Image 1 (cartoon, helix red, strand yellow):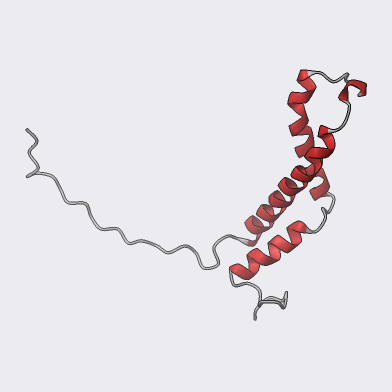
Image 2 (tube, rainbow, N blue to C red):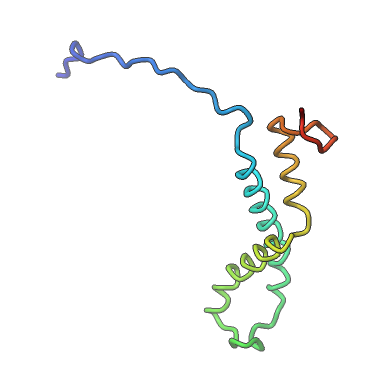
Length: 111
């Protein structure tokens, strides 16, 4: 039988609220760029699905089909690094607004 008479009660811990503003601006920028890369990857996927890979430099086949999603992701990430299409900027501004760093509809930092 278990003797619970000598068990010590757990001590209460102070729960710390998250840092004001949540994520750092660098983390929000990275998240916005990652989101844009993912969105571009979804947009590029159908284009690569319709390409006849048997006439490609590598000859197509199952191995090439397995690597195609990674190629699409690499193209999308390269497009974002080159400036993207503006999705990341919009997402970043919205993240800043939600964290209280921007005035709504103004696009300007709060004083």
